[in-house]
Image (tube, rainbow, N blue to C red; front, top):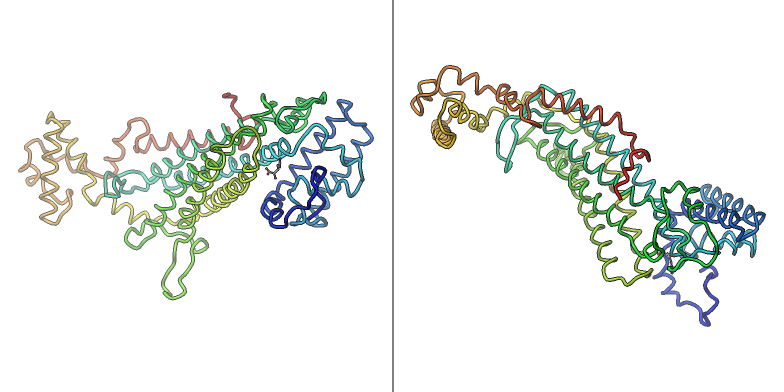
Length: 472
Ligand code: ARG
């Protein structure tokens, strides 16, 4: 392993097993850009405050820029000879410019350095995820708009319940993803806090200017307590939690896509580009992508629990346990981003079997509630009307027919209030369009929801700082 920057008080070399066990370079090397970005800001601030000479600061800044380019061109290997990304970059700096490189670490520690790096990384990651949620929402709105006349059975308990517009069903997911967006935007707001300068835990005795560093790095504010700055990871836990909820929504949709593409439902066909075959059964076209979306939700839940468990019971301030925050967070970022990207691409390519959906919308006694409502509107108490409709359903089941197959005389034999107009009343589209309550499935209501969504998406600049509400 490369020379240790903290070797001063040690007499014996580190055990090789310990080096391997404690190293984080294999996963934190992806923070190289943020680490250099933070170091450049820190170095400039040190010079601004007269803590290190301007010429030396310029040399450090310039060399850090060169190191960044060399890493990006693959000229520097960030390998296991280094403990972590912070050491790797500082070692490289000192190798290039000698002792002057050692001035960079004035008035900071790796504890506030890693805290800063993660906040810089998360600011970008959350902004990208906000953009991707917007893409998924746009796909949903577009589908809803293109299929506005399509009817389907709405389900409760996975049993036919009442007919609904397919677009209404899609817009329900739009709402869920809207809340996921808001949760992550709030999380971005709490991420947007600058911790560098808190040093090991107590702050620094040098006359630094944390506000300067914050401004330079585009942070809205400086953290208020140096111990908190290096100890807490609540914004990461919040991110993992919001990601878990987001994936729960994705997973519910994925589950529906799987069920709906089965031969039994046959509501949709997922494009070949998003399915895979079987190695033994030639006829198979499997919905592996939604299945994996459902499956990967599990690991995102796991990441939340990993983080909560790591943080639980840690005395203040920094403890090395906190190094374990990165892999779960990175994994959630990667999984959520890949999932949303794929979802936004897969949705527009799904073929909707409108004829089959419409046929099923009227089956399974989905008009039974309206049959009862019909009587209730004719002054029959709803409880009584419900009972009569239930008797009619039972009669139909025994006779092997649907409600619409009954004659008026048959209906009248259950209640005299039935009249000729009952058949029009039970028509699927009139059932749907009567549901004009706020947020209901009536066509004008769904069209309004689509229009509102389009306006919202248009006004939203995903990931933009303008969207960060100050709710703290
Ligand atoms: N690799 C460490 C981490 O990710 C950096 C901070 C190390 N600090 C320390 N005092 N050992 O947490």
